[in-house]
Length: 189
Image 1 (cartoon, rainbow, N blue to C red):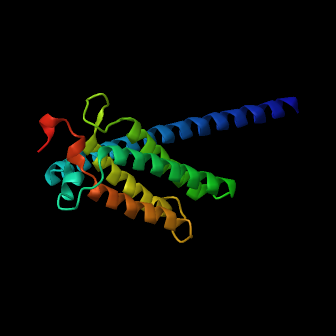
Image 2: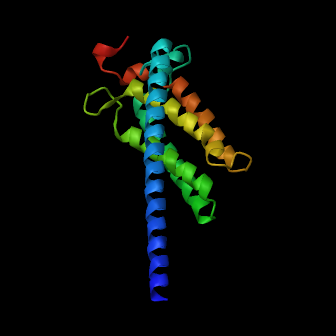
């Protein structure tokens, strides 16, 4: 009887090893497939972006006709206010157990804070993100805020209104900011 139990144990171990090896092979193949697909998608996006002639100045320059009453300094303060807004919103929803809106708010707060910390608001060359590139990244953040409710699964809920309103507000700020004022003199039009 011990022999029979030992044989069953060996067969079980062998079956587990085979399943484990098969699972590893499937995981490796899936990973290769996903990576190659991601590379193809990335190349496709780069190709389309080249065709569109989209650059770091594209978004700010699209609003050239709008009145420009927001200076780089005021814009920096607005960025701090938006970061605080999203941090507060995230904390509010987190305390109420609303994980999805909290996560979306914290993502937006992180985006605004991260870009702000790295932005050269006054064209001194001390930071890696130019003020005009900041304007383009603001458009990305506005898109993230506007799509946040859908991406995080709360688009039909009242919480979505806070994200949609901030996305519209961000577009107004982009339109009314004097992006050229934050650029070094040699790069101003």
